[in-house]
Amino acid sequence: MDAQADGTLLVRNRYAFRDTSHAELRWTLHRGAEELATGVLDLVLEAGTETVVRPPSDLVLPEPGDAPVWWTVRAVQAKAEALEEAWLEPGFQLGAGQLLLVEPASLPAPAGRVSTEADGGFRAGPARFDRRGDLRTLAGRAVHGFRVDAWRAPTDNDRRPARWRGSADAEKWSSAGLNLLAERKDGVAVTADGALAVEARIAGPATRAGFAARYRWQPVTDAPDAVDLVVDIRPEGRWPDNVARLGVLLALDEPAAAETGVRWTGLGPDESYADSRKAALGGSWQHTVADWQTRYTHPQENGARRGVTSAVLSFADGTGLRIDAGEVTVGARSQLGIELSLRPWSDEALDRAAHPHELVPDGRLWLHLDAAQHGVGSAACGPGVLPNAQLHAAPVRMRLRFTTL
Image (cartoon, rainbow, N blue to C red; front, side, top):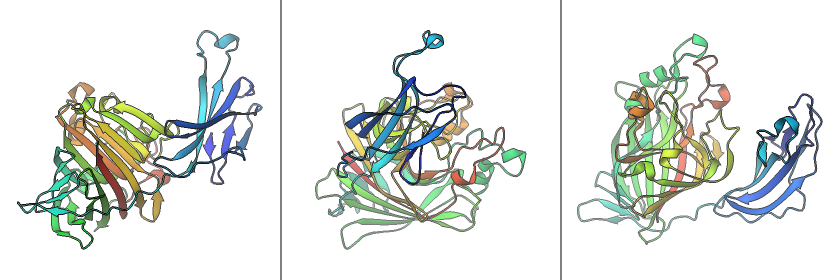
């Protein structure tokens, strides 16, 4: 089942000799995990045929809220036939598709003001900064790193040239210094409306490619529990034909990072990338950080969730952190939510590991809050990332809200 540009859902019967009378098309209207309405489509397709379906005309849609509203259709086999009785479980799902009917409401504009501390640093809600504008603590946890990032631990596909010609993506990223990015703060100031504006440049060594970044932090209210961040990223210089990701990297102190609970609204329950997203459905899901990882035989980039509009982290000490995504744009294109990755080890450790048992939690929770990420392709055995899934250096704007729980 595939969503169409005209707001319909294309349903195909890919059986060669069998109609779909053995399956029910069950639909659900839901906001996150909340079911708003359910029903069954009266439809049987002959072998090899297709049709489009749309939500019932009398379906009442709710007003925008804190999560998207999806219309999800699942093809469920209600009964087993003779050769299937030994293995088919009741309610076996043959396929699924969905339409986004209501986008989430926009985040209210922040109205608080940054305060200046005695040591020359700054405080914006639950975020504390030193006098240079470096983020030092967030939600009561020490911050071990926060900056724009454009690199990932290469996949097996990233390490191979597409169709064995030219340079591999990982080699291009290394030549551009993306694996050695460092940030220089160029300025910090409190704006007239009470926000903390930090100017920075991010680049690798001995390279002409870099990013100009502006971080704008503002408390949501005068209460200390929530802060808004607007990140503007602008590429500068000469770039390779693609980059691994565009977003920010945040490393929080968390001794029990692998046991941290994650509940998110977005695509799931498992990983998805620009060119491997068919199995992911919008909804509300939960994992631990340990279960968030996809355990490949050779450790590599994994575990991204796309379209994340909110995520709640539940730490072992009973505290929590909520992350909400507001407006996100890449180039001239706006999109719903961010791409979220969580790990109990760094990308560098993931890149160095040759086997899964070599990955050991390092006492930190590593978060990637990305506007976009490069596709994964299939260059290890054929074509590389196709044009519609490639990520090129482009201006990015993201609005994020951090709230302590």
